[in-house]
Length: 123
Ligand SMILES: [Zn+2]
Image 1 (spheres, helix red, strand yellow):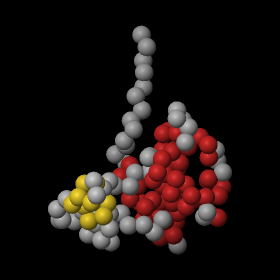
Image 2 (cartoon, rainbow, N blue to C red; image 1 turned 90 degrees about the vertical axis):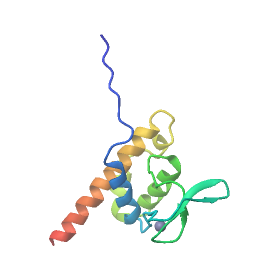
Image 3 (cartoon, protein in one colour; image 1 turned 120 degrees about the vertical axis):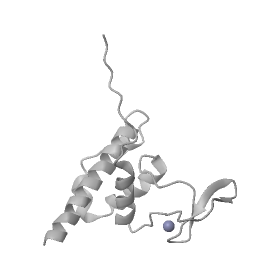
């Protein structure tokens, strides 16, 4: 009998991680507040109750588009170079390895930065 593992693609930790990383980058974690959905061009979405921007989906660093912003940001932070150097950039856009590598990167960055945050609190 063959046993296959199914790797979960959406961990429960994802949203907390994505919120943390978005805010670490100085971005707004958009909040729909109590507003009604709006349609802009052909997109259904919401106006963020915090920053006033239109958004259609929550930032998700497992998608190539959002991931690239995270990667570029981390790459330009001198304090994160050692972490970034443990990855090969071309793996992230690899059709097979990409999703898992992007997850490893985002998870690792989250773990690293949240641990740093705790260190600072304890000082
Ligand atoms: Zn916002």
